Image 1: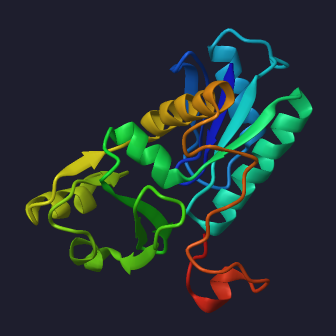
Image 2: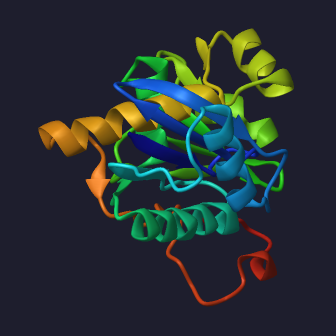
Length: 216
C-alpha cells in the first residue's frame, strides 16, 4: 500500500492507494494545512487504522509554491520514517504528464502570486516562470498543455487554440501511486528513492517573499 502526498497545487491532497488505484483521498482547502488531520481523515474513510503500515510514501517534489512543496516533502519524510516505509519522490511535472497520459505535454503549475511555472515532464528540463497574462505566449502551440487549468486560465488557453488537458489533484495522486509502485517493484520510471524539492531557481537562505518572487 502506498501513501501519496501532493502539495504542488493550490489545495494540498493526500491519498492511499494499492495496485494502481486509490483506496481513498481528500484535499485541504489551501496551504498551510493540517496534514496530520488530512491523513487521519483519509485513512478513516478508507477503513484503515490510523497506524496503518505502508510499503511506500510518495511525495510530489515540485515545482510549486516554495513553502508548500518543502512542507509536504518534510511531512512525507516524517510519515515514512514513522511507518517504516520507503520514501519516494516524483517531480510534479512527471506526475501530471502520467495523469494526462501524454509525455509530450507542456506542464503548467501554479507558482502563487498570479504566476505559473511552465515546464516539461523531465526533472532536468528548463522551468519558466510567467505571469498569468503571459501564459498563452509561453506554451507551444503544437503540443497539449496539462495541469490544474480550471476557470479563466484553461478557457484562455483553449481560446488560443491550445489542446488543454485538465489534471486535478485526484488524478495526480493516482499517478503518484502508480509511479511509486513502478519504482519499488520494477526499479524504473521517473520516481526516485528519497525526495528533494525541484527548484525553478536556486534555493537561497533569503525569505522568498522578500524578493517578491516565488521559489519552488
